[in-house]
Image (cartoon, rainbow, N blue to C red; front, side, top):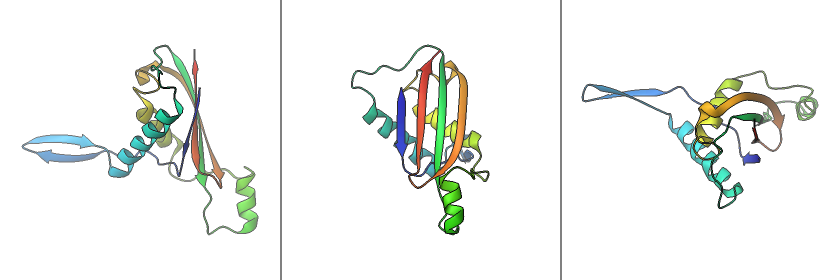
Amino acid sequence: MKLTITGDPVAAGRPRFSSRGGFVKAYDPKKSRDYKTLLKEQAMQQLPDDYQPVGCPIEVDINVYRSIQKSVSKKEYARRLSNEVRPTVKPDTDNYIKIILDGLNGLVWLDDNQITDVAAHKYYSDKPRVEVEVHGS
């Protein structure tokens, strides 16, 4: 199964902590929460109405397509678009993996402990998006 999430990818932010009544609570930053909601909404639109989350071991392949910065030259823009130059700047690939797996957990698969293999790749594109492919093991 392949899902495409359109829009600029967002990496998982560091959890925030608050204290209330002597108890400490961890929570996601707003940008991370909003992106997880977007992931779920767009994935639900692409899944069949009668879809049930996968319950077997799975492999997940993730391609993250980031926007090309507007400040680069036309030559550099073309190099990035052709994948001659790939993103080696923050955010880190593992933070993209984390937010995508968390966002699709319980919707595409029952629990992320079923994921036995993950492959992730970062690219530049003039059409920012995330492509997620799920294969049963």
